Amino acid sequence: MEPKFDRNALVKKARIASKMSQISFGIAIKREQETISRYESGGITPPDDVVMRCIRILEKMDKLAFFSEDQEMVRLIEDLLAFEGKDNGPKRAALKSIMTALLPN
Image (cartoon, rainbow, N blue to C red; front, side):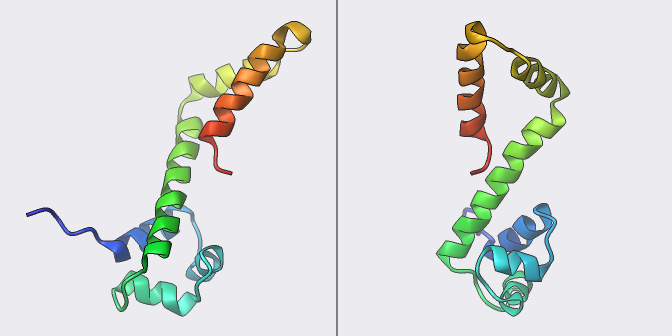
């Protein structure tokens, strides 16, 4: 038997990962603080739209962690951003395209 997906734990995990209070998180996902509290305590089950918002938040946090934890990647990005002149335009455009795909909207 597959383990049950814990929607309530997902809400709390997304809120804690984003370092928000229940009030701030509620504003971010368009719910009242009391509703967030009830989700986290298991009093009510989060609906699909809330689950999807939490998944997106966690995906964005993972992408940000990728950049903050990989110092070599940060150094490379800094080097690429320093490129100047017409000859380096394609390199800057490629970097912008990659970063746009990885970073949160």
